[in-house]
Amino acid sequence: MDDHAPRRRRLTGFSSRMSADGRCGPSPSGPPGTTFSPIAPPRAIDGSLAEVGRRLFAAEARFIAGTVDPSALPPEGLPEIAFVGRSNVGKSSLVNALTGRRTLARISDTPGRTRQINFFDLGGRLMLVDLPGYGYAKAPKSAVRSWTSLVRYYLQTRAALRRVCLLIDSRHGVKEVDRPLLHMLDNAGVSYQVVLTKADKAGKDQLASLPDKIRAELAPHVAAHPEIHLTSALDRRGIAELRETLANFALPVEQSR
Ligand code: GDP
Image 1 (cartoon, rainbow, N blue to C red):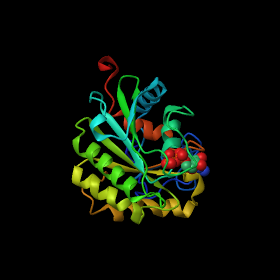
Image 2: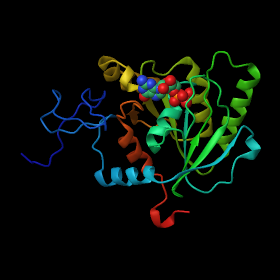
Image 3: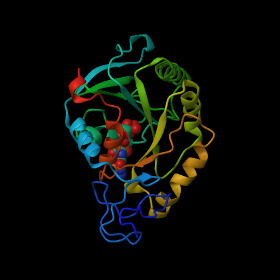
Image 4: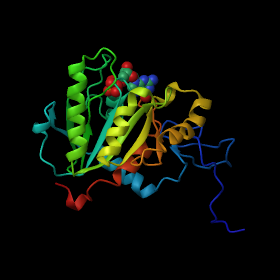
């Protein structure tokens, strides 16, 4: 037998025995020492890219601008990665976990309060863009209209935008409240991928079945990327893997600005 032949792996679900950094020790679903990943479909992590991601996100993250006004977006330059999800999905916590900072994106227990788009320059190589949350039940209609025109304008006009991370609570999956955004993303032709949050709060069975459900849900959405990440800002699972994925979009060090 060829020792280098890829082992057969389950192509759905997440590993259920992950350590805090997202890697697994011996697991009933694989031989001792097998490394699994909180990525569905499972794939091996590129070690050198993971290191690039670690260094990238360890760099200084500088607040550039925050605005509710579509005409006041900062000039384009760096490749941009945007984060979006319903209010309270854990977006600020995830951005803070990625960058290793407690207060980069404001964590709020009051949903719907952060209405602006915030731009953070990560080491002169990547722009992290924190889009305002949606789906806050008590939001007045005028606020929903403002959100829609701001986010739609950003998605449709931003040439530097490389990928949108669509945050979904791993306990709840894709909800009705996410649909307007899915259509907006499709219409804008922006590549987006689901990043599940709060994995520490979801049950094992739930996590195992979620990727298939989400994939079925997103099948009609042309711009959806097939890879799904599972994360927890609390126990930090999946953070290293998401950094690895996002490192693909950063400028090389020698081109940093
Ligand atoms: P945002 O409104 O989407 O920016 O959400 P926040 O990051 O402010 O988080 C909303 C609430 O969920 C806060 O109480 C957070 O402490 C909590 N939270 C966020 N991420 C996680 C996580 O990974 N695990 C757990 N257990 N709670 C989280």
